[in-house]
Length: 201
Image (cartoon, rainbow, N blue to C red; front, top):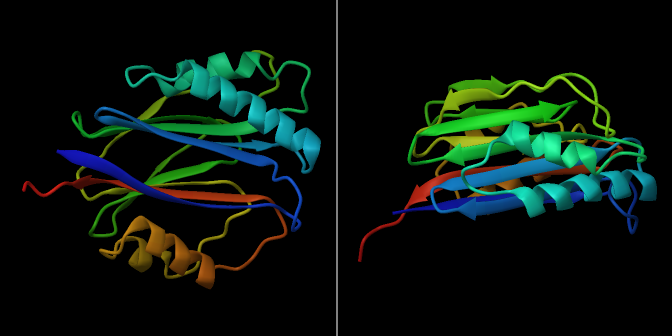
């Protein structure tokens, strides 16, 4: 029996203002969905665009769907908005794979306990309701591997690999990363998650 454990760091460009980043994380049986949207620019218009597509992803999401299908559904909600970059990952522990689709500068990667990194690349551009070229990418994902998803307001510290592959809980890992990383003047979202095998009682 596995449970998906994760933690999130989410801040706005300026204190006490709306962040232009939004996120959604949910577990469907053996699949965890992790997504980040970063509205173009900052402030209310950026927030509105990011919020629209995350709400649509949340509405349409099912454990047996696909990230690219969700991108297409979400894209429709952005017509007439400023636009947003988006990344969606689905981590299936039963099939031991991660599938990913993204548009724009959202970073997604996996890292094994032995610090083997593998990146899932987003297509260039942004979503604004118009047709787009998207690609769904796949990687193996084993128990104890970690998935990392973040927007361009995050710059991981040099020693991030050692922090992430420690046996610490995701919440503690996030705290250590935030403490050590260089701050960027931008909205920022970082999500770290892994499937954890529950001990039988």
